[in-house]
Length: 284
Image: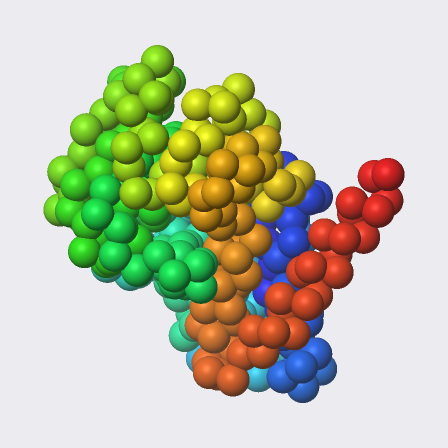
């Protein structure tokens, strides 16, 4: 069976190390996990070439089991799928494709990853939250907050007009959203939880202003720690990194793709940490 991660850029992805570690521990000797550079324009043709032939057996050699999707494909994939989970519809993005019975099914495991990462840090019932950034991961963060019982949040973006899809997702999720621009970022210090979904390096300029935040969840996993994470930690706050989210969303993907519940979380964690350490060592 074959699986892969797709996106653009994709060379930095840790997903192959996580999924391959799971396959080894689970004894899935015939499984492979590949990496494909793929943008929105190339996605339709890629999916057509991967669709299974209806009636093909699930253990057929070379059959595609599923895909992990990263930017910029999470939203672009939705109209190309045969079915989409209710959660992926609400969020407006699928980071997972499962191939089965001749069809392509979309799911969202980012929400699960965020909730598990928060739970590991003891964050189970924030009273207030602010989300930085307005992309697909921000929508997943709002869904995770909704599931934790928080039905109102603040969204900080550069241009409110470009946050339309995130605002629509909040409406579908039943989350009341106050949209602000980054010149109002000082107000986030009053939130119990700040979730930064900004790309690596983008939040560095706001590190000093984020230092008073009680809990920061920064979805960046490399380079780590970010300047914002270091500022919050130095001030005594709680910091959650993006690796935990990546790990747990991958665990759920392995469950969906293999149909098995015995996914080796710690083996995947160790493999991911080892690769991060290798990259840091190599960079120095």
